[in-house]
Length: 298
Image (cartoon, rainbow, N blue to C red):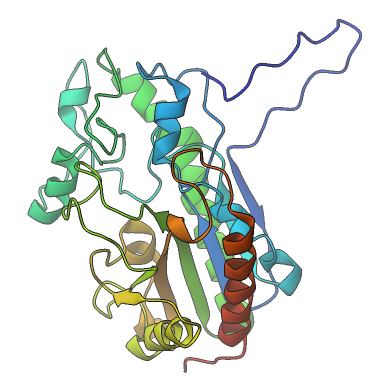
């Protein structure tokens, strides 16, 4: 399934260049941003049973546009172009629902009860259900196709994030990693452990201070509140695999998840950008990035 149809390529034309599934723009500052869920390139081997407009509801739509200013400021940028509903790069490879498969999974599967709650909602490494509970597949997946998704999506994405954070830390002796997301105005039935919750404008998560200095998280929260936004801290989202894996404040590696309420910048039904809200939000995010670039957490 692809997002849009293209005309046949004439025999005389050069071959089309495949769209990369992961992109990385190297930075020169201590700050790294990544967007794992805004991808819109739907691979041909997806084989989903639902139409594209339904699948697209899972995207963190337009998040990459909100932060488009960042590379020009020397901020490292990593972006997934594959959609999260195909493979969720913010999950560990052990977070797999074995009932999706046509044969036993020959690799470790998590036994963590908290993680398993999300997997049972259909929100593991490979999604089983949409946010409103619709089954994504009408067939079992093979072990081979899940392995292929990990190899072509998960591994390159994590390699790019790790390399960019390592480079920032090597240059400056510390790194600040912001994991960039968006969230619906109201949590759906299968999207979260808190269905029906009306979200704040922002949710800032550092896994209860384990992935970043709480003072750094407080700086972000206070800055956003001063700009007039409502902000929740570590509720209902604490941060998942990307901050857990790369955040280590004892080593001056700080990773923080930032969720933005989609009602601030887009129409959640049509997925269209609302220009006035989008422009204000971009300006405030750029000012926040400026504050982070001026802050040494050591």
